[in-house]
Length: 189
Ligand SMILES: Cc1cc2nc3c(=O)[nH]c(=O)nc-3n(C[C@H](O)[C@H](O)[C@H](O)COP(=O)(O)O)c2cc1C
Image 1 (cartoon, helix red, strand yellow):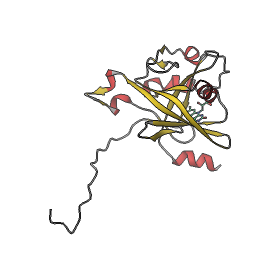
Image 2 (cartoon, protein in one colour):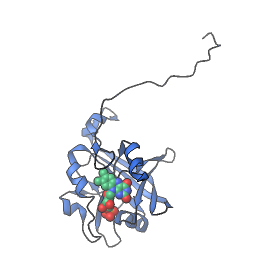
Image 3 (cartoon, helix red, strand yellow):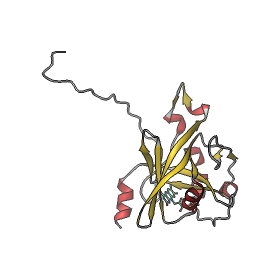
Image 4 (spheres, helix red, strand yellow):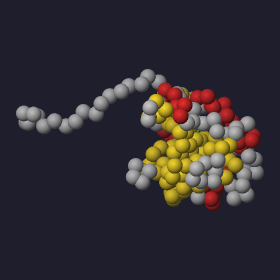
C-alpha cells in the first residue's frame, strides 16, 4: 500500500530502458523507472530491479549494460519490453527493434533511441527484494538529430516519464530559471 503511494508521489520518474545480454548471448531490454544519476565524478547512474529479473541477472553476470533513452516515439515498444518474457527470448526481436553495436560495451543499443548511456556495473546494493545497480558511465552516444548546437535539446529528446499506477508523461511546460548567487547584504558591491 505504502509503495503505491510512494510511486504516485515521487514523480515524474525518468525511465531507463536497460539493454543487456545474457551469458548465453540472448539480448534483453526492460524499462526501469527507479532510475537516476548517482554520482557526478565519476559519472555513475543507478536503476533498481524490484525482484530478481533477467536484466539484473545479466548486468551482474556480464558486468555491462546500456541505458537507452525512452522517448515518446517508442512508447509502445518500451511498454512491450516490460512483458515478462522468459530469459531465452531476444526482446529486440520480440518487439521488432533493431539493435546497433555500442562503442565500449557488448550489449547493443536500440538503433531508434536517440541516446545510449553505456555502463559498466560498478556495484549493487540490496534492500529486501530490491537491488540497486550502480553503473559507471563509459560512453554517451547521442544522435545528431536531437542536438541543438552542442547541447541535447529536451524538446527533441521527448523523454518519457513514469507516474503512479499505469500513468506515463512527457515533458510539460519548460521553465528556465537562473541560479541566484549569494550576495552579502552588508557589502556595498
Ligand atoms: C514504465 C515502466 C517502468 C518500470 N520500472 C521498473 C523498475 O524501476 N524496476 C523494476 O524492477 N521493474 C520495472 N518495471 C517492470 C519491468 O520492466 C518488467 O518487470 C520487465 O519484464 C523486466 O524485464 P526483465 O525480466 O527482462 O529484466 C517497469 C515497467 C514499466 C512499464
